[in-house]
Image (cartoon, rainbow, N blue to C red; front, top):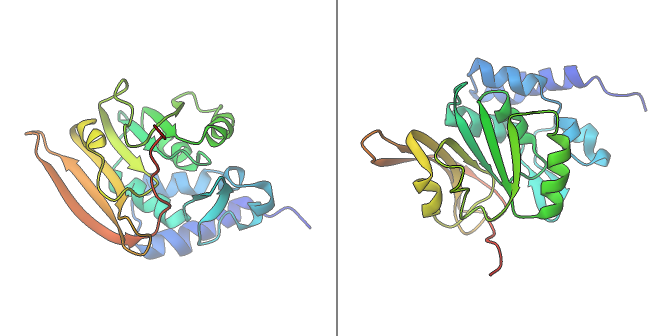
Length: 213
């Protein structure tokens, strides 16, 4: 079969899946248009990389559908000088998107083989640092973060992640113990220390799993 025109596939994805659903941040749209998502999925699924659906990436994990990646990124309001924490590295796609919008990305994955493979894919981005660890605990040694994006759902927000937000920081996270009852939520730490929460949209994510004790 002939090689797909990946650039056309990305442009169609941006127009039909993202812009048509209200994603409007020009920087987010441009990064989604240029990041080669097909390199962040199993080779056998490359032709489905720009479809409007999540895809399995092994070890019981998925890469979120493009719209959800764009939505979470837009909600986080990335700025060029920001430090970001990406919890649930998976294939590395979200980290690759963030890396082009902020100063530094630390990405955290519990499953070592996924972290290792993602690190290889992200090797060309010198502002991304891959770690193996427990998403519930975050990365206190690297905190505080201006942005935290979590790609798996705990039942309630982990206190450690709230604690690692800088003043003005934004945490985007799916919450809910059951896949059919999850909400994407935005937490913001105000400069006076108060944390405000806003529910955005129903979602469906794999659970956030703690590291076995």
